[in-house]
Length: 400
Image (tube, rainbow, N blue to C red; front, side, top):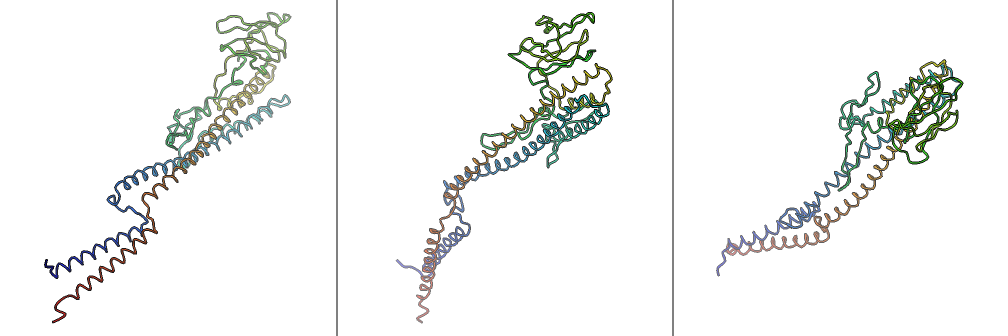
């Protein structure tokens, strides 16, 4: 077979160019640290890399969400801490105001601080985050959630609770509705509440009350009767169906018991005075503090006025205790969510390390093997170049 000079040159040149392409590819691999530069290099490995990178992107988003959730919950926890401090101070002021030695001026001075605390509570309820969103507005984060309209504080937000995905199957509530935090606070002792009628004219004061068994939910009325001043004061307890459940003679500083309820009294009721006992309802923190300030601002010159003031202070003290407990419960929930975020972040970090390890094994270059292969390719290229040079020297023109 005859081999032309041109054919020999072309074969040598193709071989040299092929060696150069292989060498260039090895240089790119070493420079990038990647074994797979194109899907055609390893179709299965390339598909696996795509899946691993997608999973890593999801983990990265979870990490971002965790940071946002932690920031939001830390802010709420700080607000709840300040809320607790304010409520504790209001409780101290209520106890101080209950001192019988206080004058009208003393109580009005206390009322002034109570109103100042009310303003601080309103400011806390309208807290905004770094993005300018109101954290207790539900989904309506752009509008002021709590507004003092002159007749009380109203809530304009909604019941929404923003959630963030921090793990494959873990969602975290990063905010609480303002209605849940500031409005739905249990009254009384959290189980029942005893309230004197607003029209009472005696000096009856409702003291402590509680349960000594299972409470049968109903609205009970304790009615006091004294037909003439010389008669003993008697009481009758009826339920919502007007059925008498207890009766007896009233004695100051003695408890009245009925239907597992125990209520303490002091003072002397007038004929027709009454007290209602029912399951605890809910009352907003703002209504509790407003009522406290209003009661302290009213001068008292009669035993009936003194009794109304003391009943108002007792009710405020009970409701403030419930508000403190309610705030602590929500703060405990926030703390539990922060713990979940910490635990989930650790899981995400562990999973991220695993994915990075698998990704590296699939995609990254073995430098030792690559450099050895590079040197072999370099030697092959140099050999091809030398062969090409030798081939050029075989021309007959050199011998003419």
